[in-house]
Each structure stands twice: as C-alpha cells, then as structure tokens.
Image (cartoon, chains in turn cyan, purple):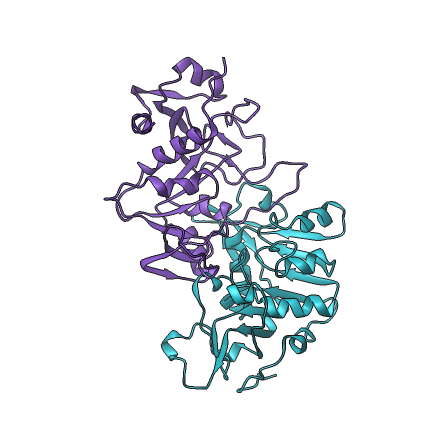
Length: 229
Length: 230
C-alpha cells in the first residue's frame, strides 16, 4: 500500500499503537544518541509485550528502549552490544530472553540488505570466530566471507532532526547512526523529530532520508533525554 | 619479583608510546579504556582525524558544556573538529571494513604470537557483545593493541595461542604494554623495545610466546619524557 504523501503528525501514544504484541521493532540509536525517546517512552507506557527488539544496543536499564527490556516487554533482542543494560544480561542468563549478537558492521549491513533488496551480505568480519557458527562460508578470490542474511522488522521507530510534511528528514550530529538505514527496512516507519517544517523549507540537498520511506511523524516530547539529544 | 608500575603510570605510558606511531593525516579509531588516552599525546605537528563507530569523522576533545548530540562510541561527549562530518552507521562501517582507516587502537584480553586477538568475551560470564570490535580489527590497515603485559593476577596476556574466544585471526600488527613493544609481521612476533625497569629475561618470564629480539633492542620510546615530567 502506498504511503501517504502528506505524513500524519501523530502523538507518540498513537504511534505506539502501531506496535502490536509479538511484532519485531527496529529502534534507532547508539548509546545515548539518536534514540527516539518519546516514541519509546510511549511504547513502554503501552506495555506491549512479546516484542523482538532490533537495535544496536539495549541502552541502559532506565534509559530509552533499555526500559522495554527491563520491563519484560521484549522476548528477543538482536543487537551488537548489550553490556550497558544489566537487565539484558540478567534475563538472558535466566533464560527469559533470546539474544542474537552481530558484529556492528554486519548488523547494519543486514538491515541495509533488507531495505535495499539484497539477498544477503558477504563480510570478512567474524571469520574464524564464534560468529562463524551456523553460517555459510563463501570463498571469493581466495578470501573467506561469511554469508549473513537480511534483517527486516514490522515497525521502525527512528530519530531525526527536522522533517517536512512529506517526511523528508535531516539528522543532527551522532544522532544519525542507524536511523537512516532502519528507515528502509521496516513495513511501518515512524520518525521522531525536533520539528516539522512546511514543504519546501528543507533544502533538498540536505535531506538524508527521502520522505517516501516514512509513514508517520512524531514531534519529540518533554522527555529528559529527548531534550538533550 | 613482580615488577609493578602504578595503574596511572601504566596507562599513560602505553598511550604515550602508541601516540608516536601516527603520521600526519592518519585516520584513527580509538577503543575505550587505555586507547582513549592516546589522543592526549599526539604531537602538535601531527594532525590525526579521529573516527568513531557511531559516525563521527574528526572527533575532538571533550567540550566545556557536554552535548549528547555529539558523543563517541563510549557515550562521551566531544567537540567536532573544523572540517569534521557525520555519517550514518552503514558508511561508518564501510569506512572501517573497507580499509579506509589507517589504524585502530584496542585493548586485549589475549593476543597470540601470530596476531590472533581475543578481546570481547570470557566464557561463563555475561557476554556484552562485540560491538564494532570485530569489524575494526578486520578492516583497519593497522591494528595496535594497548594492554597491560599481564592480567591483574600476573598471567601472561601475550600467548602462543589464545584460549579465549577470538575477535579475529592474525590481525594484530603492534602490541604495546607498559614494559615492551612487539611487532607481528607474517606471523612472526618480534620484541622491538623494552622498558627501563625490566630485562629481556623478565619479559621472557611474563610472555608466554616465542619471539625474536630486534638488534638493537632499544629502550621504550617516551619513557624518558614521562620521567622528566615527574
């Protein structure tokens, strides 16, 4: 189904309703930066469970989507680093949480592969390590590569800086990280932004994510970290 | 007779020595821990472009007023240098894996004599995840390891064969500890420099690996500067 040309600007609570129990959700961010804090907070409040969380890391147990893990809303985490959130490790050790770890460059490339219509990724990263287990090794020009498969999600919550009503997005500083890539790899993409400007106000040369990828916009709310990122 | 330096002295000695490895214009990624300190010792006439996994090229020092919109991979705020820029994670790791970094400096749990690196997990303990480490060591042109010579319990960290799960095979080019500098070329480890507190016999005793010794074996560079300061 085609996305709307003029994107609805919705509340975070409304956007959180797009996420239903059992869905997979991509959430942008790296450490404190670029997390769609307002959207995530609404999802925490909605209490939606059985989620598969696809995010670089699981933040901290009391920060951003780290809370989704801490509150038991997540059944599976796909990430590259979870060491800063004690609950992720604890729940995994207790058998309450499934955990799949990817090298960070492979993680982003698998998401990109899904969003870019590719059948997989061939990477030298992880050859000869435990990461290789269960993966096909393909030799090209004498070098071994691991075959990693595309990673998609039902919904992506991303964080950008400015949006126009057509959903075109710009980013700010290190908040950019995984957000533009995740925007390509989910069925429903919601962008949390600092501000929504009229069509024509963003310089087309500075747009990083084209609005055709976006379904809905949310303006960041009064959240401690949303205000600081 | 265990020879021990204070933790501060150890960390800064290693960082100071590694800072001498760079050339003007090098693009470098620094890991967390001791590697972070390396940027404090870059000579003024050498301009290094620091890259961070989360997408900064040209990361500078800590700002007076922290701003979480400009953070490094470890979450610490920095100032973006004039001429710097931000990229998304796909390009950031394209730069890393694609051989566009001159060097990466990382810590280690174990390094083997033929350049295998183990620095991301200890079996039985909670696995934090490899983050960007596996990509960095596979992609950077030069992998420099900053590590204490032995563990806190005195066990060798430079070994014949890593017993911990690997981060990558055969990638390490230089190892800098508080007591020694080793190069690894074509699977062959060589002792290049030695700290004034130790003898070659001491190094052999705390290194569980085969290595050749450079002729001449020189005193570890930078240790003199350190002593002048104190």
